[in-house]
Length: 515
Image 1 (cartoon, rainbow, N blue to C red):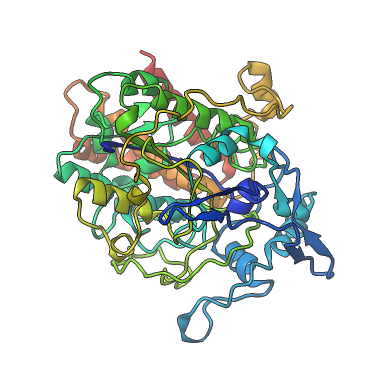
Image 2 (tube, helix red, strand yellow):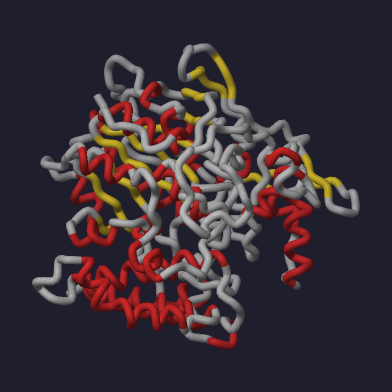
């Protein structure tokens, strides 16, 4: 019986990019019949505007020098082809043929003046480049029709795994937010899964890989940090190995690396962001699995590993339409008039449990709200929106009558990428840790950085709330810090301003943790 659900959500990789050439055969997760992954044949291709064909091929680089676009308009052209516009007649999403991945990156490179090969989004990792992921895929279950919750970027997709909605957000956050929204966090009409867990008196924890976990930007989460619901990854193994461990749900956020916005951002993390070394995320996955597997709670645990969105990488499977959440949008969140009736690009998902059959393949259509549906089914919780109420859970993959005794206790070491070692000071500098160089950070604040600014504001409120021994009231901290924080935020004009603020907050948080 599964009593503990662990979820590790990584960054920005499509299914084909990670598992497209695995050529894996297995059994249907529901019927037990022989089946195989919906993977690549090797003939799939896109074309450049010149008409040149670019086929999928093995040998994806461990780290990219350019971040392929994945905002709403980027994904629109990636799925529907160059020149696609939203909406078409009747407010619908255009017809999808997955034809615009290469041409969109080529256009991005041309406009930015950055050198790069647009064919990189058609590159696929060979199995020996990702030995940890491929071992787990063979030992447990793969969901090969799991799509991001909307055709857009990280922030709204991550909101869906917490709230079965993005509150109408269809693109990355904007600098333009009301004071209330900035200081109180992102709100959703029906709350979040954490509200449901609290109402049912079910214990839960967010494991933060660094000082800026995205979930901290949600309404009510600063109070939960103060209340002890957040823990650092350095404490993960000790917590899970505690015989008294009781968490029903553990959501694990990776380390996002150096939060910069000049082409060196996200390095030296373990989120598997395209700009970082993918093998660092493989090590995180290995550490998480081995910790859970070798803990005294393995026989009652499940681990779901997934990616928030595709990161601009090619996938050949056409994402289907979907039921909108049906909740009320937050004012100003919806930039494109999107009504959330279309899923985004397919992403890789592993479901791991002693009750999951070896080599299982789940062909059902999922999105991130299937995680919520799983929790709702296991723990008797009510759905948050129409999206998770209609989503299939993966609890059906916990189908074995007796727990397996053959699950590996250890996994292979990650591949050797040959990229700079981030564990040393020299390695960090080589990887781009030059956070105070205004000459490199003079442009406007980019979309990927704005969300982290909002998390930094939340972290600053957390620090303010614990600054006094008797200060447990986050509302009082907001009142006390409102003018200072808003003034500081309003003065942010450039990437350097943003990075400086974020770096200062990170430093204060780290100093507090190590007292």
